[in-house]
Image (cartoon, rainbow, N blue to C red; front, side, top):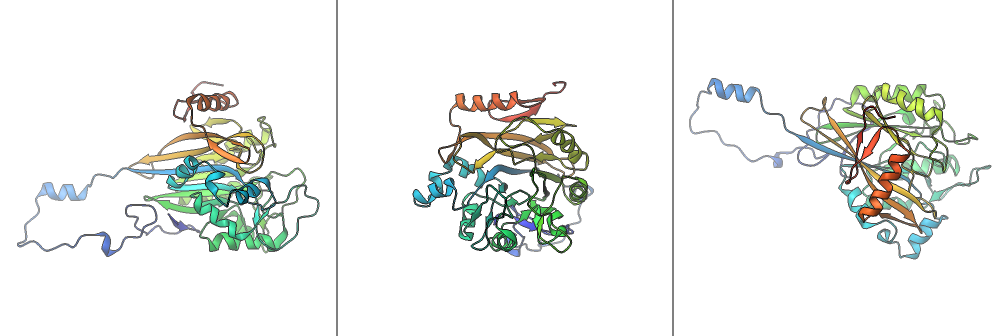
Length: 380
């Protein structure tokens, strides 16, 4: 793994040197020797030592939409047909970009198990051989979202297998757990001295079948009533420098937003989130800024099914010299899922087509020629 993980809010004592998650050891420092004679430090020297210049830092956070490794589904059948070569399924340009992120998140829309049976009453159920979890490392993934309507598709045993498979692979998950405490717990990842919190919850089912985690029962964190999710966001804001809220919400296959997305998305920001990034509709939905902070209503499918749809990888670049005063730049890497392959847009014409489309379905945003998203103050 690339990063150092905090699963509970702890006093942050780990010293990060160089890259993310590296604990300092004696080998990180050159040997020092006493000077030949002691020299009384001057007032100028003391002043310089007392007020060192703050060091600038940059942290990149990556986000991609729905993925499905279910062996029964078309994308994985294609993967096996091309010799289990993920570069024949996901553009190497995307893979390189994802692996270059300091922290990379995807929506894990299935379970990992070789046990269980499909949940009665569900039209679509997705289960993957646990060995397929290795694909996450190939994709550069550091954390996955489980607050969705497919993680419990094959029952409790397969759900437990999913948690164990991810844990054994060193991949933290957010939004689901063995009980309500685990499902609601923020996940904290540190990079370059910056603590990022991830919180996730689901309100994606018309007919609610995926169980809500209880005090002693497994399931997801739900946000049909957002009270518990708002509490998780507030808790995360107390312990992190940057908070990512990840709701699974909205109506499938439409860019039309539900009223609850418009209201609760803003409530999540008011509760302490710095960005809201949604999933579930299986298509891109619009973006907007609220109080200077972005809401991305849906990232759509990334590598999920046989249909053609626009997609994107989102990069959030955090910069600063003080973790309490970060600047955040949202950028998008546009592309298309088509014919079971996800490809990054490579021509200016194709990029501009997707940028223009996103602007059209969004509120108060603009996207420049290199994919940077900015707020248009005063726009409706």
